[in-house]
Image (cartoon, rainbow, N blue to C red; front, top):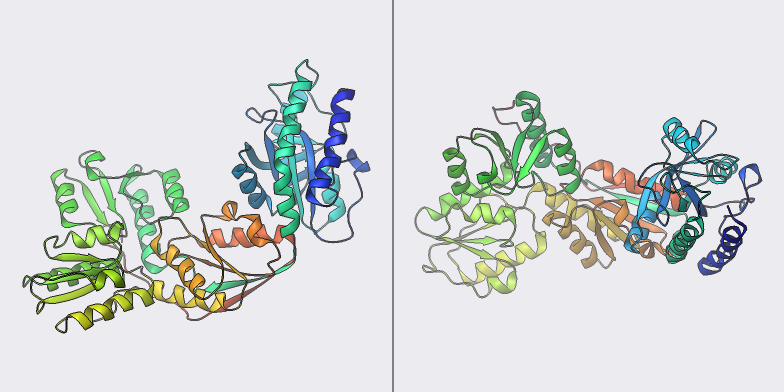
Length: 489
């Protein structure tokens, strides 16, 4: 490294420390790495060299693990920091960083990458991790050179400037990390995550792939969770919007949210081998609509008109079904025969609001018929009850789930209604570090379509900011399991 670049980096180290409010460990080489603080989490920021193609000057590598002499040290907060850096517009890679006590260049880089699987190399982080032992370490490295951009090259000065720019852009995130670095209690809502209908739908696709081989086609998302969909895609499932996109005669799974009869007819016309993964509780609502609508009655469907479940349910009797979004709409809807009216509900609604809509309808239509049993599914009710209990005892609630998951969004609303700030996140990378500033008690739950592993990963990520005391808050035990359709049983 040239003297000019080295001087610039020393200046940048001082600037970073000033911006985050305390020194950031960036100086030293190999065993002479800067001494660590006596306790608490540590963040190491500075520059590194890229080891693999695509990791280029000006990019940032956040270590999920640092490697030294065959030993490895986890960096749990990597998803939190990487997500924050990406939201700043930086190109971020997450993966291992190897440490050595000398400059690595040329073919030695490829050899180190092959031996360790690391994305980048530095001369500090592994030595610092060894000093820290079990204490959490976060490592943020701006890349100054890579396999396609040798260290000893005329362009090194320009690439050094790109690395410094990346570090300057990262500085606000380092400040957020510092403010969020606290020991905290985590309260886990129970029950949370997968319900029986979601487990059944995922197992149906898995078994269809085992029985028929890839590809198996799935109309729409099997459940509303991006991680579930991506996992099944890796196994050979192909997701489509409509059955017209599926080759004739192909094996096809209908998603858990249910479909209108017109979709089943289209599948028959294409000679598709159909396996129905509709949740049995959604199928129950379809049956109720057919029964209520048979005499020509108006059926009020309490739910959100654009949700897939409501679209499919309405398709059972489109001339008879009137969608009711909320209590205000319940106060306005009309029926051709007020003496022939009934109602059903979308299964994933917020319980209190749905019941209020039903109450308004009952007041307006004394002849209103109701389902024999509540349509809102047991899992939705249980998870809302659980998050309400957690919200009462925490300062912040994080709900793991996809944005298009109705039951997950309702959990956020329930927590907020209890007076606690709440946020819906796809996974740990979407957690804003600013939310955690000064927060020592965090509640965590997950929607019925979110994998439980995502909750585990979020708790692990929080442990990178300080010591975690995790506890369960269970309001009810669930033991429900639905049988599989005969095609895959």
